Image 1 (tube, rainbow, N blue to C red):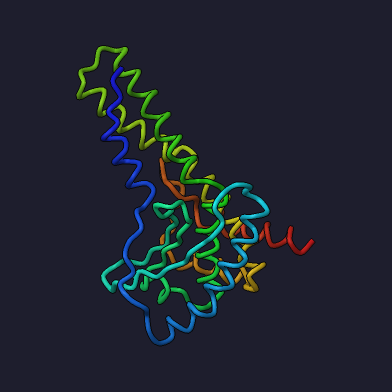
Image 2: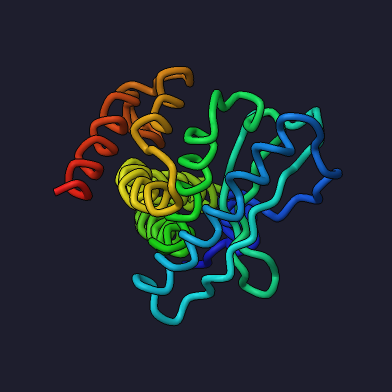
Length: 224
């Protein structure tokens, strides 16, 4: 079976989120909030990474995409040298109601790197592409049919454990935020204002209530 690698690599690239240029430093209250939150979260994330992820690059860099046209978003990626990068858009910083919420979001993204979710998701995509592409080939599918099956398999593979990854990042993000000196229970209030994915079929994120419970359970464990 021929594997359509260019197509799959494009899907993987979209999955890992390339580093975007930072348009410039934000001003006003956003700048003050970043100065309060970012150094503390970076330090806590690096310490937790060294404890849990032996051999992985733990030199976190948190940057701001201050392009006013960028939507509210936060994501984790790696630069060409393998350094973990967390990107926060200016819109997201403005959406956070307090330092705890911003710290929780940044800590959640750091947890994705510590848990190696990008690499795990890429492996799931490749496995899904191989399985569905192979089935299409065995059933006499044309090259176009096989390519379509591989694309579908990659998408299904990426979503196979996506909810689990989010909950894992919520749990570890709670630990990082707490050790950075912030209140993750207050930080989880961010979930009360974003759209709830509910239990949609093939949804990539768990329901917001389930994520809040994960934070509460993790905090209870820390306090005990």
